[in-house]
Image (tube, rainbow, N blue to C red; front, side):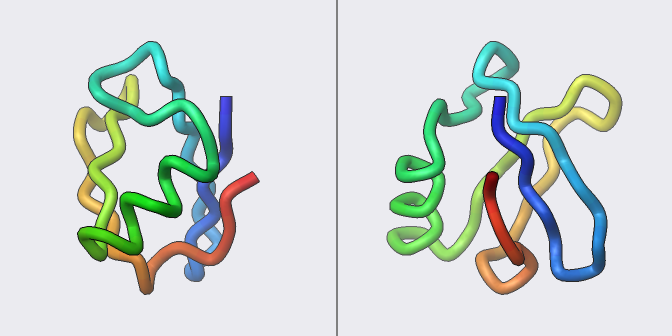
Length: 59
């Protein structure tokens, strides 16, 4: 499971077993380059639309 860290300090978990979440950091980065965004599915909040410029790091 990956952690997506936003520039505002918020941390979100990327669980590949939920929704259509991608499985690797590389896949997420490629998606961000191609589309400029990533739609993250979370247990608590459902789908969250993240723009590439909101994301500080993926670990």
